[in-house]
Figure (tube, rainbow, N blue to C red):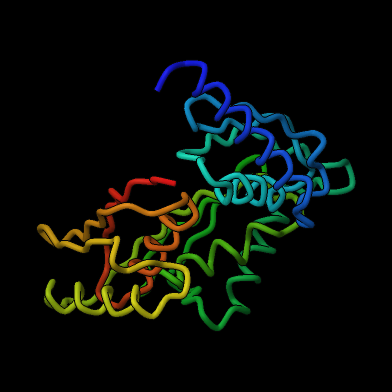
Length: 225
């Protein structure tokens, strides 16, 4: 594909990403987010007033057809009223985890430095890891979350894992299971094939992670609009 065609496609993707940001009700600071595109790779810059908005901006960009990857360089600049001490944030995070029945809070450690929350420990399921992150990322004063929680999956046969995931793909309304292949190598789950969007690729990985027995996923699926 020649450079002129690439440039036209990149301009179209940029326009679509901007429109997606502006139409997302979770993003109130869309006008402060810059968007650039090169060969299908979107770079987001600028600043927003909360961490959830930063995440929402990245998700919005990933939903756009033609986007192959997203570099999220958006900064979180909290308003003065939203600034809290690391001690306050840590206490709030511990309480949020304690009140979530999905999360084994006694197995999770919380560290806060300059508004960034780091989660460590281990859980039995991927959804528990995601739930822990979801509990803390919207707390007032949080600028970002580093999720280092490990998923300690039970021992089951690779063939059983593969079968369960293939069945899950077939049940999902968001995925075309015929275009996705599942293989297991040395305890690792590998996804290959082609999907129509980055969001669909991520949905396939999320379905894989939510299956009991999965502790590692390598997503080699190619986005081919």
